[in-house]
Amino acid sequence: MLALPGATVCTTGVATIEHAGAGEPLKPIDPLHRDDLVTIYHADSTHLPFIDDESVDLTVTSPPYNLDMSYNGYKDDVPYQAYLTWVETWARTLLRVSKVGARACINIPLDTNKGGKRAVYADYVQAFTRAGWEYHTTIVWNEQNISRRTAWGSWRKPSAPFVTAPVEMIPVFYKQTWKRADEGKTWEIDAKDFMDWSLGLWTFPGANPIRAGHPAPYPEELPKRLILLYSYREDLILDPFLGSGTTCLAAKKQGRRSIGVELDENYAHLASKAVGGRVSRLNPSAGSLAEDTVVIT
Ligand SMILES: C[S@@+](CC[C@H](N)C(=O)[O-])C[C@H]1O[C@@H](n2cnc3c(N)ncnc32)[C@H](O)[C@@H]1O
Image (tube, rainbow, N blue to C red; front, side):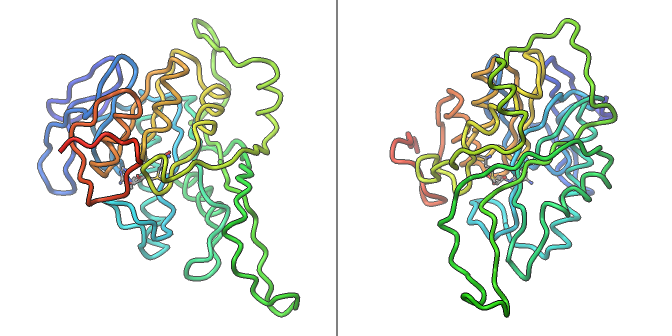
C-alpha cells in the first residue's frame, strides 16, 4: 500500500491523493470520469501516487514516442537520453502499482530516424528490465502503414540505402512470475482467437486520427486482443497514457474494470466521452476534433 498521508483506498485500487511534483504539496485528485467499470484521471502518469501499490493486473498502453507529435499538453520532443530516463521512471511506477504476476504490454516503434537512427524497441526493453520488469515476449504489429516510406537513402545504390519496417512492437513484461493462478477467475477467449493471437505477428490497420480526434490513437483491436489474451474478467486494467480512451473502451466492452490516466485535459474529456461519459468541456482551439465530437463550451 502506498504510504501517503491521508490516502484513501477504494475497491478500484485508486487512492485520492496526487503528488503535484518533487517538493510540492500533495493535493487531492478526483477522477474526471467514473462509472461501474472505468475511472479516468486527468493527471501525470510519471509517479501515479493516486493508484495503490500492487493493485493493477494488466497495463496496456502506447506512450508518447518522442517523435515531436503535436499533442496538446505534452512536449513530445526531448533529448533521447532524457526520454529514456523518463521511460525508466514511469516503468518503475508501473511496477509499483502492479501486482505480482501482472503484465505490461507497451506499444512502441521498432526504431526511429529522428536525430539519427535509434533502436527504440531495444532501448525500451533495457529500460523496463532496469526498472525491475521481466521480459516475456514481443508481438509484432504489422500495421501495413507504408505511407511513411518517403526516404530511400541512396536510391538503388548500396552507398546508403534505408530499409524501413512497417511494423510496431508490443514487448510484454511481467512482474516476478509469469504464471498466474486460475482459481476463482473467468476467461472467455475462444480457441481460434487464442491460436491466431498467440502467433506473435498481428496484422490489422491502424486507427484514423481524424475520426478519433487524437493525433496518435491505436485501433481498438490492439487492446482488445491483449486484454483477452492476458487478463481475467476480474482483473484491473491500466492505461497510463490514455489518449482518446481506446484501452478503457476495449476493457469496458470485455467487462473489465480499468483506470485511464491522461495528461491533456481535452484528451481526457475525449476519453470520457468515448467510454460513455458526457463531454463537459473542450477547448476547440487546442486540437483537432472529430466531426461528430460533441463540443460543449
Ligand atoms: C500515443 S498517445 C496514446 C493514444 C491512445 N493509445 C489512443 O488510442 O488514443 C500518448 C498519450 O499520452 C499522453 N501523455 C503524455 N505524457 C503523459 C503523462 N506524463 N501522463 C499521462 N499522459 C501523458 C499524451 O497527451 C497522449 O495523449
